[in-house]
Image (cartoon, rainbow, N blue to C red):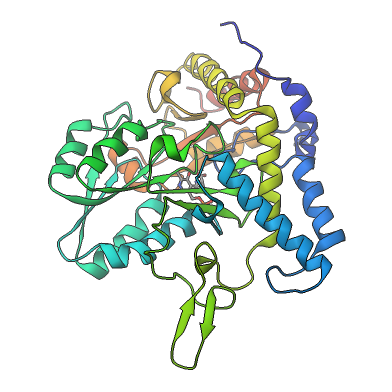
Amino acid sequence: MQKTVQYNVEKVRQDFPILQRIINGKPFIYLDNAATAQKPRQVIETLDRFYKEYNANIHRGIYKVSEEATAAHEEARAKVARFINARSPNEIVFVRGTTEAINLVAHAWGRKNVGLGDNIMLTEMEHHSNIVPWQLLAKEKGASLKYVGITDQGILERYEFQQHLQSGAKLFAVAHSSNVLGTINPVRELIREAHKTGCCVLVDAAQSVPHMPVDVQDLDCDFLAFSGHKMCGPTGIGVLYAKGNLFDEMVPFHGGGEMISEVHPYESSWKPPPYKFEAGTTNIEGAIGLGAAIDYLSNIGLRKIRLHEREITAYAIDKLSRTKGITIYGPSDPQARGGVVSFNLGDVHPHDMATLLDEDGIAVRSGQHCAQPLHERLGIPATTRASFYLYNTEDEVDRLANSLERVRGIFKL
Ligand code: C6P
């Protein structure tokens, strides 16, 4: 297979100091990008500069350094808005990550809009973050959860989706891209169908926004959630996008400083969004670092990153599938999947697999990847997952394949 060159991957790798490490005597191969991505020096230096030059609380201080911090923080919000093509920075609320974003919607939108007997539609490939908040809400309100099933290849059962819509789902909460199967769901089409029945749609974009161009106006989603740490940004910062005036209609999630307009002993009023949802001192440097990550990824280009990952994934599926005894999960068409390859090799337990790969300097994730219902649907206890990003190379895939041969030897498969 001929690989087309999207950008200079070797040059990109130089930006990531951690990739120079030697682990267990071997060059470090980081294939756990779906869990968290590595950080380029441009992001590290932005955080360093913040602490050295303009660390201050924001929106509070009437002095230069605080004003600089506030300006940088709000510029980061504007960068996020441009990055996902939101109409306004006011549609962007900073949160800790995808998990908090979804919990925010479950509390602040769900409590008001979901009631006794209502249905919330999920899919069998959701991450726990897009299941548990809805279970909590459903229990509290007497609502029901409906799951859209998947085929054995990890594709959504469209007929079931339509059936649940017809039975009157209030909300459809769906992963844009699965963190286990890699499946990229046709969310644009699904959203159009859902809206025809008045169903609101939340897109869990934890595994898509870091890896491909995402345009919220084109998708027309109502909510979109993602995490900074999966896109070369800091940990503890994430984004909840809400369309138009949805935030206006929602009740606060957390109460505290800076989200209020006035506070009296027995009642308070709120600032307009996004501030209404950012109570207390937020992760200021996290937001600024996320802005730097967005600059970094945008300079390379999300379209190019997506193409690079698609090629690496296609290469990996082709290469790994030659390993005797391997089962690879998810769609066979690399066009229909993100840079995630989950597999099992014979009856080798994924935790043993991850330990042995680590001996070769290769970091993968093993277990259920916070997707237990999906593993139950697939009828397997666990998987090993290799997940790729903009800095991974075919050479690294080759080393993974060689290590799998070593594991086969050890287990006499
Ligand atoms: N998945 C993985 O290894 P947080 O933890 O809030 O940043 O993201 C949660 C989350 C939500 N949805 C999807 C599809 C995800 O993949 C994740 C995070 C990581 O697969 C950590 S469990």
